Structure formats: structure tokens, C-alpha cells
Image (cartoon, rainbow, N blue to C red; front, side, top):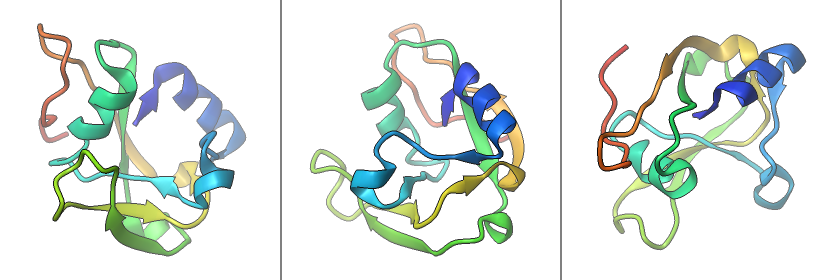
Length: 110
């Protein structure tokens, strides 16, 4: 997930290198059932967010399932991509809008 403007930049450069990549060493990813957690932390109330639907076979780097941040449920593991995210791994892009309360929920299937 990112803003529509970030997606435009991502397509132009061919890879996504999040600002926290050097510190974390990976790209934070989410499943459909957990994406609302980081969306609400990072983009609460914003209406310019898009979901990037990925083909795991095109990622080209290791994915590890690891804990998120301390406020996430204890048993929840998030996929972390230990490499840059290639634009050609994105197979669909859909708008991700918050509800009337400004909060994101589980997105519909694409």
C-alpha cells in the first residue's frame, strides 16, 4: 500500500525502496486481512491510498513472516520482503478508501 503519487513514482523507477528500508532491511507487506492495521497507523483518514496486489512469484527476494509492531495482535505475523519491491510484481492496483469514520477496514477482493 502507498499513496497514488508514490505508486506513480514507483512505476517510473521500477522498484520501491521505502524510507525505512535502510533501517529495517526489508519492505513491510501485509495480507488482505491485516492491511487495515498499518493503513490506520500510517494513512488514517487519507483518501489517496492504493493497494498494490502482488504476485509472490515475481518478488525476487526472500519473504519472512515476522511480528509487526507491539500494538499488533501477539500471534499476528506479517510478510516482510528482504529486498526491494519490483514494480513488475504488482499485478493490480486498487483504491483503498477509509470508511466514514476515517478508519480503514478489510478491503474487498479485487
